[in-house]
Image (cartoon, rainbow, N blue to C red; front, top):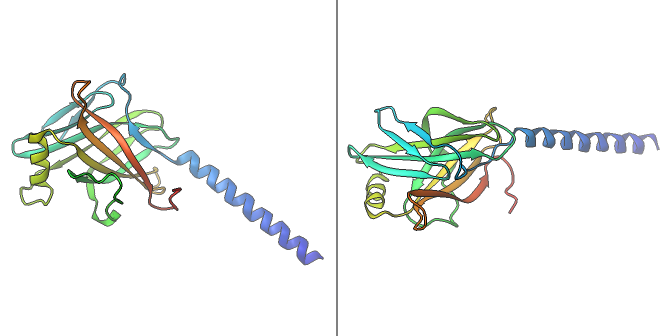
Length: 193
């Protein structure tokens, strides 16, 4: 009888510990979404002094000096700080396709943070003409086509990694390029779908 009571007590304590841990992680989890229309514009500067101004809920893909520069105005809708780790880009429609493996993402050249409940930005550039994405990106800019960007990020401790797929495209009813979220994927835990 004592063994059964001890087993039940330990099982209950383990369940309570898992619930407490999950609650703690939810308090650290970021979730990146486009910024709002009325958020201030983000001024994004690159290391070679190229700059983009991205309005609220906006994105930008531009060619300058034979380089392709990209930026997205973001808002962190989660409870924890988002730390952006890397990105992947494509110009073809891949709304339903799974993202590339994390090891194939391009690493950010500098640390980008988006505080909980606040705004920030993502930026990336393709400068190498031999890069496999260069020609398709340049062509997409010239033809005014949609560009898909997968952003890899996690909490401030490097955990709870998530990939969010953004689409940057011109919207006919508004001036400039706008961003929308297409999908979110969990990297370090089971996907809820």
